[in-house]
Image (cartoon, rainbow over all chains, first blue to last red; front, top):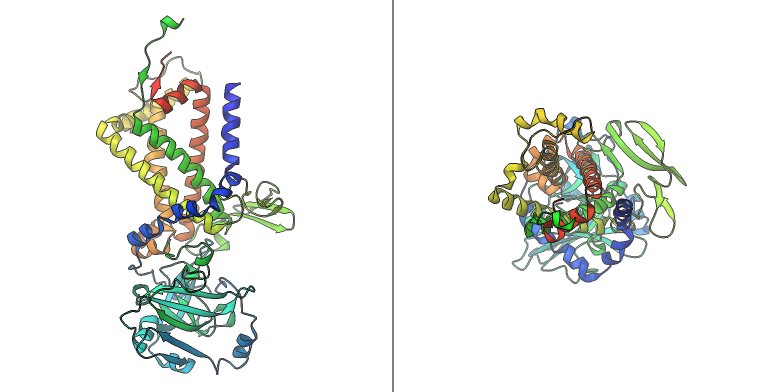
Length: 245
Length: 262
């Protein structure tokens, strides 16, 4: 009897995991406790490493579309129809020389090519060949001021509820040698599903950091007052700002 | 009868008991939240990047109301158990593992990751605290499997199977106990920790040889999952043994420290 009771209670304790933890998971105090390890992980792992670079043969011929597909907004549809002739990448905020870059200007800047792996937070991975402008190169062109701390990427896609996608990196991450404003994937200009005309590539962090359809780069001292204040679209929904794990 | 009893012995130190129960809690949370994370991409590939040609396990819902589990290309219908299961919202849906055993008990990758990474620290710190104290006290020496134990493994198993009347001579722990403790604490647990680390792009960037050692990121995910299954197997056997070898006495000794010899 005792044996059966013990086994039954063990099994039911395991099977009760879901329902038991759902309430706790929605408790703000408890979530803060769980999130307390994020700064430790960030401090220990950091973003100083270089992501492995692969050879041409390792790259996927058809790179899986991450996140959302082509934005359906009228403004974006018009940009695609015009082949991005009127597209401007606005870079402003805490910078000495704010500027609106034409696509042609970005293409004439020194280009970097990287064949790196994209690690999605969902668990899958894909390898792509990306070319574009190093983010650090672009930031040097506008000159971040002394009060600059973060670089915020504002995108052209909204989630249907009016929330625009955005992301942020700190300056250290932005000057990482592999932080890339990609213009090309697999030797062709980015297509709309992959973030045309400009997307970010941050191979040392999870895929949601690599924002697509970037329209505006804002250098700021703090992102606390942007959207829900967590530094990104997915961060506002509970994902880690430090996306290195 | 009571007079014939030998005096109780203090078998487990406080640190051993505390780390045991904290580890048990962390293990349950890590499995539940790990299944939540798995559900976000319910495939395991023996490769670096995702590769359907090297898919070892795929749990899915090919059509409404049908759950399947595909292992090495062989597909089994597992509706209700895997693939198409309880979604934690009062119905069934395309969920690899049912929401009744995931943490939290509904689809929430962000929440699952938070639980997982917090309790990974708890489990790791427990293991370290126990390891250091066991090494200092010298009890570690009694638990490590040595080459001289290998010939005694089968006689011990034969004794358990009642094919032999007496166990082979051994020290504090018998050879099978030593094999399982050594395997769990020094092979499987480190494997699970290291393969978990290898999944992180930030760690991959500072320790790429680790990821390569396990065959790449997706392969590390497969090892991580396999390690979890091995730990679950240990957990099941361990629980069975406790339940069948004087459950009250065993539980009391792991709670209060005091064990009553027969």
